[in-house]
Image 1 (tube, rainbow, N blue to C red):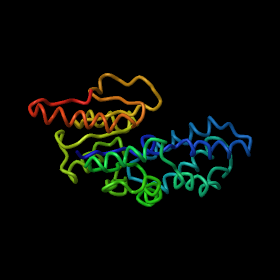
Image 2 (cartoon, one colour):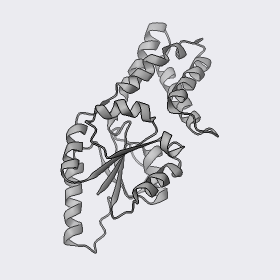
Image 3 (cartoon, one colour):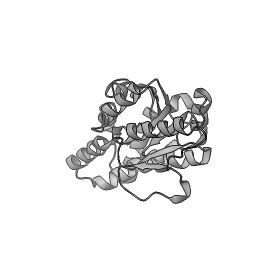
Image 4 (spheres, rainbow, N blue to C red):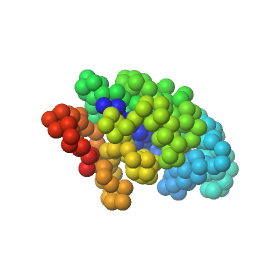
Length: 234
């Protein structure tokens, strides 16, 4: 089975980025929640401008807008290197490394789909033992998720169909919604334990990755035993 994964929030814990921003705020008497909200709000807006902005430049531009919005002169922009380093230093959730190893041993092909850049991903992959067959970033696709072209690009390159492929992601808006639109089978990693929108079902839902190897093994046995039975991840 070809398994495509979202990266940030699904495999890598991004809370250290929030902590980095919070530390800057604490040292400079700035409301950290307002700053974090501004950071992710402007990131989303900048991703969907007319022309794609490379991710490192997008982070830098994001910090400029934060300083403007929060009236902090160049406080956040001057900490660009520290915030970028936080991306380089992201670590996987506790179960991720062992789950990826189990999936590889079971014969699955693993691919990453990330809104990050190829350069940042080089650092991120090292924390996951480089278990992936290939990585698709915005540098490759020329767009950011949830734009459907990102998914279509991967589908064309890997010759994906619903008999050979499953997508696994935490991001509901960035991954589950476009998967529903393009017709991909999907598993939602609901780490925040929120209620998903039913209109984008069917999808299987787990709170983390631990159940994934067993689920895939069971699904494979069903397909082998009942070849005409099309098992849906729901």
